[in-house]
Image (tube, rainbow, N blue to C red):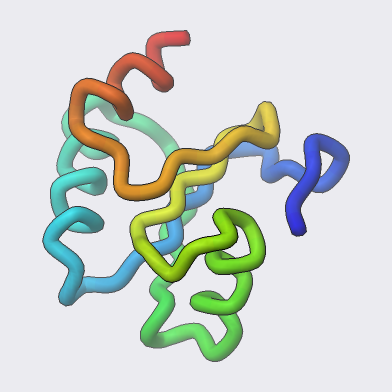
Length: 85
């Protein structure tokens, strides 16, 4: 499980191209010019397991922030609020 000690130095988003919520969250990040790493849970063998270990859920997207916190399936306003904090 990711802790503050192993948090990424930049935002990491776990998602999949078939996921509408993932595409929506990517649009928010891209529109705001956020630099982030995208981890495709379909293409990368253990990515879905890593996302589940972080969130405790099978839902995506899982967006992990440099402070060690994460959001799962955030609404656009939730994601914007977290990015502004």
